[in-house]
Length: 116
Length: 116
Image (cartoon, rainbow over all chains, first blue to last red):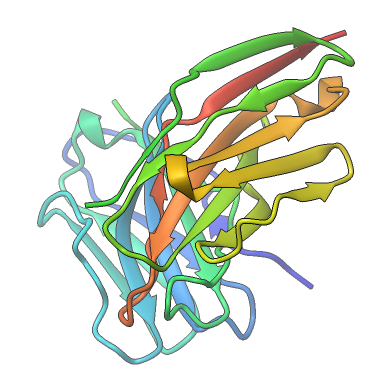
């Protein structure tokens, strides 16, 4: 079956512009996660969605970052007034259940964001 | 707070050599899960293995093997008879047993370069 897909694969924007990144999870997966990976570094958790529960936004670095998810489908991560430090690869993952820590997360190919 | 440390930033080997990647973690939970992911040059994270904290049995999958030692909080990964296709960045990750979800805490990654 299809894996996690993300679009666009690459995005170049100017400082101060808003950007929207999209994630399509694996069909049937109830949990969805966003992570950020700066160049040469590990992944940082941003936000987590589980069904209709309130999202866990504890990893969002500032109020310029927001994300939405409708039901168990597509999610969009929005970064407003982008800054150069936002340049990174943004990775989306989904998992079947999402509760209890034991679920395996499957990752998409990422969106490489470059802020000039 | 949970933490994962991968002390080796880069390892270079010649094809057919064995390579061991170290992973040390910190957590206050008694129940947790450990993961290894591979990130080839294409960028997409590939799931390799998941272990829970109650299962210390070592595991072998083809040329891959994992050594989980709870007493030293380590979950090391060995590639036997390395091949050029093993060249990638490998990440160790930890999730704790939480009802609200299972965000992954990643180590900084170890870049493995296998030379022909």
